Length: 138
Image 1: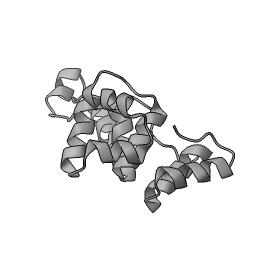
Image 2 (image 1 turned 45 degrees about the vertical axis):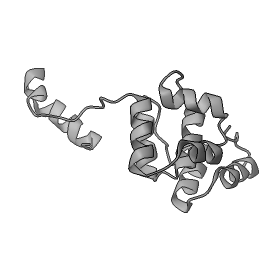
Image 3 (image 1 turned 90 degrees about the horizontal axis):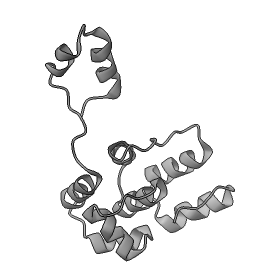
Image 4 (image 1 turned 180 degrees about the vertical axis):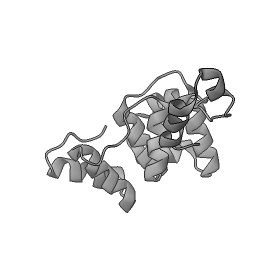
């Protein structure tokens, strides 16, 4: 997947959109459930384990994986923590669903980013969020 800055540069320099399309850019084409299931498969994870680690209610989580439900940003972040995704993987996951990426200058997002870098689980992350006066996830 190209960096956003490269895509913006192409858009700025081309004279018409047909030239943009002909550059063979990579766009986000998968649904959230397809992307989640691809991550599960690529990382050789079990959905039941991910759901358990995430703290998301089991039935609701399976509906997210099947594409029947669209999760709120926090539920998606909880699944990401449950999958032990990297910061970059979480950013891509948020992009796929059209959510704002984690922003280091936002205190709550900063705590979540720290948790991702340190490999914290949901309990540790929520403890940090609570201690710092921020809303917990799930």
